[in-house]
Amino acid sequence: MRIRAIATIAAAVGILFAAIFIAGFFFSDDRLEVPVTLFYDDKDISGAVVSKQALQSVVLAMEFFNARSKTHRFIPTRESDMNVYNAIERAAARKSAAVIGGINAPFASLLADASRRQGISFISLASGHSLARPDDLVFRPRPENGGRELGEEARDRGIKAYAVIVSGFAASHVQDFIRDFQSAIGTPPLKIVSFSSDLKTRIEDLQDYAQDMDAVLLVLPDWLCSVALRELRHRFPGIPVFLSNWAVSHRIPLLAGPLGDGAFTASYTDIAWDSPGNEFVRFVRNTYTSSIPRMILAIGYDTVAMLDAAVKMSGSSDKQAVATALSELESVETIGGVFPVDKNGDLRHRGQIFTLRSGHWARGGAASDTSSSARPGGVVP
Image 1: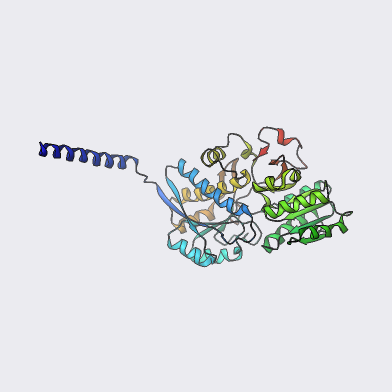
Image 2 (image 1 turned 60 degrees about the horizontal axis):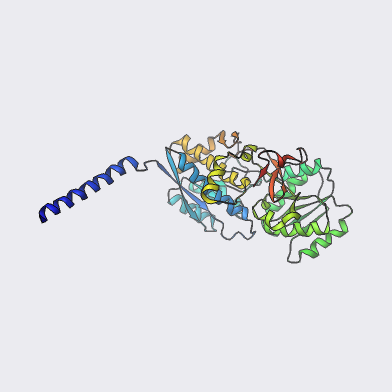
């Protein structure tokens, strides 16, 4: 009896292992693994939440693409060493296919050299002119900062004189944004005020310019921007306020409250993102109940769409093959259709104006119907 029982158990165990083997054979994930290093700027002193939310959106987009791809899957790893050369060297040692970095990383001028040394692509979420080069391995889903579009909006609204309140951090970003805004509106600012701990005094300084001032431009991270916006609304009721792309986050409507209504910003988010049937937005909401605005989710999605297109083109996760494919991309299919890639390797979208309305970022500016937020898909949460 004992021998028979042991034999029965042995047979059962054998069947179990066979079942596990068969299940592993049929259900194992044999897709191409594509390691990707995500560069987190833990010491981002600007405090702009958009930088971290953009990288969160990249991770969400990778999961979304992984769930739908039959050929490959992205495997993200984290790197936070502020020495960009060390970080990229380790990414290459891990055999990463590419590195993806944040919006406000202070090492933008070093990216081209560091990535070239290791022969690995760096997909940068940073905007600005310094990275617009055709001979490097830096690629961007959002090369423009929106300054020109905001300047055009201000010009179309008849703005002729404006003041600027800026952050003391990330001087290159601040200078680029003001320069782009100024080039579009056609006139320099009356006054540039640097945000300090005594913001009330700084804003009071603008009283001397109140009669000549038509608008105010805020080039500030979102939480500083919300404080400045509230102060401006109290002291200069009704004055148009324009916000840089630093301000795009879920916190601005919450912190600014009703006083934020009417403030303008710019984004390169196609109108197709407003559709209630947007599959990626639904995936994020159903899975994570995330409060990340669609304008930031779009950055993450387009970043992964660029990398996905390069992996499909190369059929490889090798860093050099992926870098070559990225440099040869002429277009990328993303939400809203196929968009071109320029000679610098940057994805090009048409800039759009968004306005804070009733606690949401709504599409529309001077050239559009002011009731656009009431139309289907008009409100962008």
